[in-house]
Image (tube, rainbow, N blue to C red):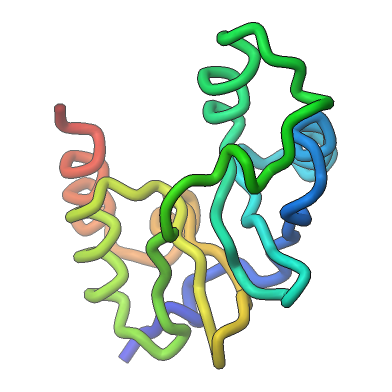
Length: 138
């Protein structure tokens, strides 16, 4: 059985819930990623912020990203998957919810992320094709 832990990339870096969107954007640039998990003072996952969120929900509305915290932009509870979940459960959740990045949790702590690139590296081409079709379909 292939699990979420087997296909995730570990070492996902969080942005603190009190850090600004400017800091989040700089961290994304430095890490060459398009999304960051938001972790609270309790070291638990509180959300996810994407580069698109920063642009469409902040910059495009004329708001200064230096004045908005990451937690202010992250609304709702993020979808997550347990590190021991089967890869079929990963695909089902990501396809069903049209999620491109999925935090992996172990014992209530963030241990990694699964992205489209991770799926492409670890799964058969047919599975990846079905995922892309499901997530990109309107």
